[in-house]
Length: 52
Image (cartoon, rainbow, N blue to C red):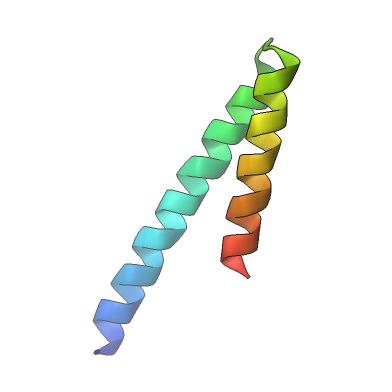
């Protein structure tokens, strides 16, 4: 795989990760049921683990 393809893939993944983080942050600011907050925390944890 050439360097430009790898860079494009990394940029696309970073963009998706940033979008997910932005959506999660917006969710945290909304008044929502506690169960939904628990699920959002689980989702964030799974996404963080994926980054490692």
